[in-house]
Length: 166
Image 1 (cartoon, rainbow, N blue to C red):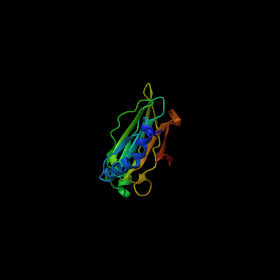
Image 2: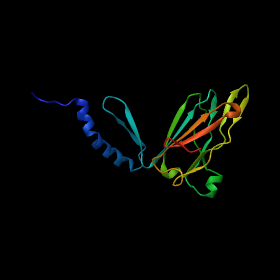
Image 3: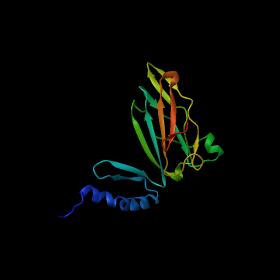
Image 4: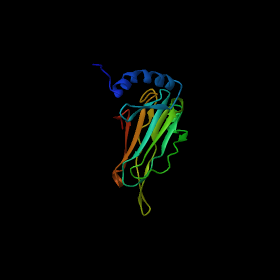
C-alpha cells in the first residue's frame, strides 16, 4: 500500500517558503503582494515600505471624504497638510483603497468630510484626529476611515490595523 498526500496539503507545506520572497520584495517599497491560498482565496500583505489607506462610505448618501496628508509630521505639517488624497465623492457602500509609499505619508487626517443629503442639504463632520507616522502608525499599517451616520450624526470612525483609534 502506498501513501500519497493530498495535493492541497503538498502546496500548504510550501506556503512559508512562498512568503519569504514576497516579504523580501516588500522591503524595497513595493506596494504589497496578494498571496493565493490553496483551496481558493488570497491574503494581501501590505508592503513594508507602504501604508494602505482605505475609505468606506457606510452611509446611505454620497460622501466627500476630504483626506489630507503630508510627507512631514512636524508642527506646521499638522496645521497645513500639503496634499489632498484624490478620492472624489464616494457613493453609498463604496470602498476605496490607496497604497502610499511610507516616506510620503508623515501624517494623515480627514479634514472636514461632507455628506450630501440631497435637495442642496449637506452634513459636515468635525473631522478626525491627526495621525502621525512613528507615533500612531508605522510603515506597513492599514488605516481605515469609515464614514457613518446621517445628518447631524454623520461622523468618522478611524481604525489602524483593525483597532479603532478615533
